[in-house]
Image (cartoon, rainbow over all chains, first blue to last red; front, side):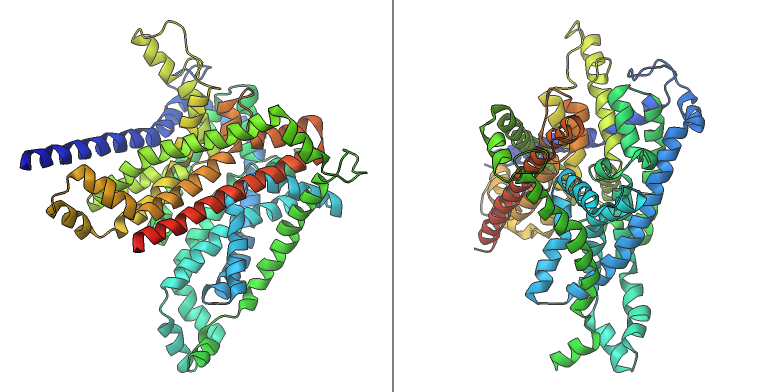
Length: 269
Length: 285
């Protein structure tokens, strides 16, 4: 009896362990592959690379199209993050503690861009802007991106507010602090890291957005992920591997910083 | 008493008005406009009618695209669950230092650009990619297999891209699970497999459903991965919408496809939410 139970436990743990290991390989492999290929000395995406060199990273120095697109993406992501934080934090404060039905409805509304197909919204936004006569520009891009990125800020801010002890704000109020003073000196410092995590997610998501940018950009507002996507579809350019290498290292760096100062991983669950 | 407290420290719902206004103008109005455009019979937008929807629903090609999108999403979700559940299970049993490493491995793909992640799959599945090189070196095949632009390749790529969305809710569900329950089950003589299948899995059903909802919806709408790994032969709904706009400029039909796609995704969300409610009944009942 004891023996059979042990066999069951061993086989279960072995099965789960093997599957978990396969999952880890699946998660890690693509990143490792991109990094290795980006250092290739050859002209193709052959793996393993025939030799290693920095030539494709050096090639980025005068890849002006990619640099132009990257600059646009950074600009849009920065403005999108700013707008998302201003609108999102205010909205989160408004609906976090409210038990009214309208607060629930607004919450679902603000979260819906996360689930709905971005491409359908992108098309709808393009039709809308052409009807009201706004030409596509950085402004239309920022507006479209804010719709799909603000849910991250709303979500992390509401989660941070939910963990906040109401007694703190109450004591501040009963000691005579004004509402604005209480917000600035008590609430904001306590939910700050939640807002920061949301801002980070909004920034990354805007920087990476394609479905909305696809419809709202013009030749003058080329965006980095779209340039990369088009280069990959037409010619399998090895420079894209170098760009990817830069992006992976930057993402990893930002992620570790955010984990330290904002406890990123806790806020994603 | 409580009214006074709310008055003092609670924030007014009015603070949500700026974002609500922003959503009304730039989210709800465009979507209503999209539906309005889809109800036109001709590309010049002169005649009203359900012609575009009829065109989609009697066209075998369009229906195949919709069906293929829903099936590939389902296959991706199953693969994510099959590999993601064991990883979440391993995570909650790991010591603290290993958890920090694992969470990094799980989160990095989530935050890495989708183009970058998809690009990796082009290298892995390509003619000269890892899989083909390995199989040829081992002498299993003589000529490279066509893995890129195949359904299997696409499902694996989509699963990798969306795995974190499955694993994170599962980690939450598994870490909330009371370990005493599994011990009790074992003490009462249930084997490890029986305990896992009859206690652990059912009690984390809400997490499973939450993870499946996210991975399913995201794989349906993953335009970049679908077009780059799936290619032209594997046209799915997002690519179909884009094709209608970019190639044929048939706005009413593109709008109609978008509306049908939105409805399909909303239907999927509703089904998962209903399942989620049932699951909570199971957990508490």
